[in-house]
Amino acid sequence: MGDSHCRCLHRFILLVVLFLSFVFSFASKIDVSFHGDQKRSLSSSINSSLRESAEYTMCATHREAKDGKPIALDFDCEQGYVISKITYADYGQSTGSCGKFKRGNCGASNTLNIVKKKCLRKEKCKLFVPDKIFGPSHCKGALSLVIDATCRKT
Image (tube, rainbow, N blue to C red):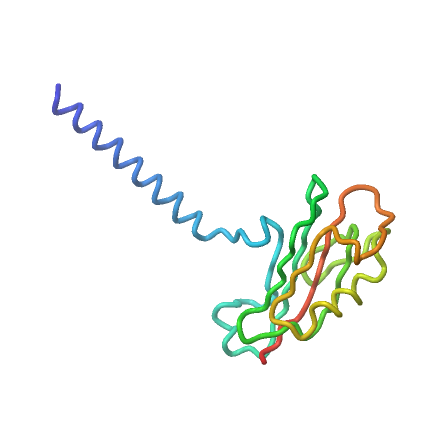
């Protein structure tokens, strides 16, 4: 009776170890940057091609916090690269995805100029959402800051 109890215990421990190794392996592959917000590279494989590439495209989406407190959006190029071009920026209710964003019916009209002024030619750019610098928005509902930019090797 003691021998079968010991085997059951060993099997249970083995199952727990296998389960935990799977969970930690999966968790290590999750990108949790921007507090769960979206940040993507449009380059096919940023890690392998970055060293050979002169530039790559990045995008970020950052939604307002429900409590209305400002949250920082860190929009950073890889080391040795700077933000060379900002093709799209909107603080409102944009739709679409990386490289294919479309402006909604409302939002701050000067967002692109503000983001260019604060971020161009920098390796790292920090913007806060919400922020008075974007001006008033006539949107009803949640707002988001959406940026498409190109990082170029320095």
